[in-house]
Image (tube, rainbow, N blue to C red; front, side, top):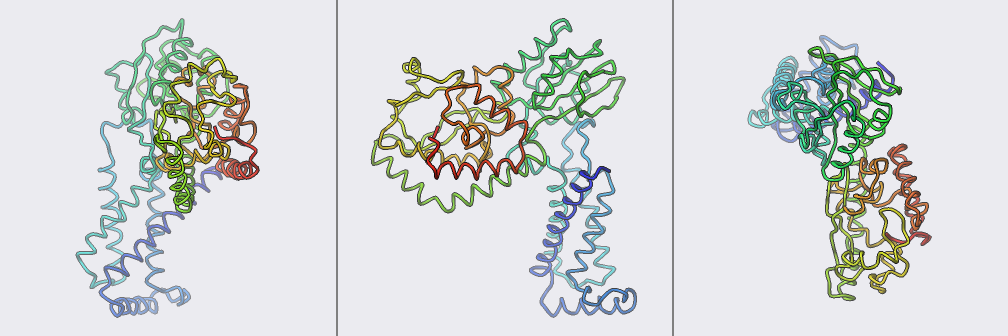
Length: 478
């Protein structure tokens, strides 16, 4: 096992050990032990066994809590030796949702083991009604923390809400029962010939990516032994999941990480270049939710003051929502404090001749749509603060490329579409460097730089520099 994988397993093991051990200790102390005297009598039985069987341990280690931790660690060690718990193969066939089956299996495994521990160490006289309830809790935790799929679902990114586009895959193909496809929705099925494979795939993906939340591409190849080099490089840089079914063993032009299996005379290749997926997505969401909740807790009175101030200046709504395009083309309502006159966005066409921005950008000097007494909200980006709600909902992140309007997205070329493959943010590299630039190529440069170098550490650095930029009044709000 590689050192990175070993560290990942140890972190997951340690985290699960702490969560389950704490839950058992807390639950037994609060519910299953009748009183302190009952717990002390059980402790005396353990001391009696200690003197007979395992007195080579220091007696300070012999406590009921230590016993529960040890029993949990032993169970997890045994569980982690099985592929059932540690490995979810997306290339396995799955004809139905197995969450219930997995839960029942974990329920039987855990309770047969744990009740054996209770019997072995003579832990008796427990409240039976609360003990029955307890039997359901730990298997539920084991299932929830089994892998990133369920946690991602809980944090706002459900596999069942993800979509894919297929190329030359028959509607009755048995390969649609692969787990990676069975839980996702087919948005479009395209037929093509090998003569125009690159043009067909690239155009269809780009068009669908602007319309739907597209997460996965499925290519069913027949006679090809190599993908055209432009198509191969496009798929690698697409930052999505790609599944290739081929009658031949493929030879790739580039070196990249992929999985390979052979099923029913078909060669199956799978690679996932989704930047924010699995554990990375979970870490980013936990970080975003934690920071957003803390900030909202402290600034809610200030937000209320801004709301009242806007209402006192202008009779229109103080808080507005705008349809923007987010992760993988998903549309959402982005919240802002209103700093422009009502229906200002509809006036963009009339003011297009004053727009000095290039590409899908619209910003003009001394914009007549802005309410002058509210300009300071834009100068200090205070109008963006309601987007903390979008962050908590999972539609935005604290850090990422700024979400644009649908009509802006329509102008994206195939390279710039990559900005849709990370969660849009309240701030980003552009905002701390050249926010007021008129050059769309500079937007592109910073967004792609962020995508290709994203880490949680980079997000933290950008946030800290954003606070500095706001304090120094060096950047104006978008």
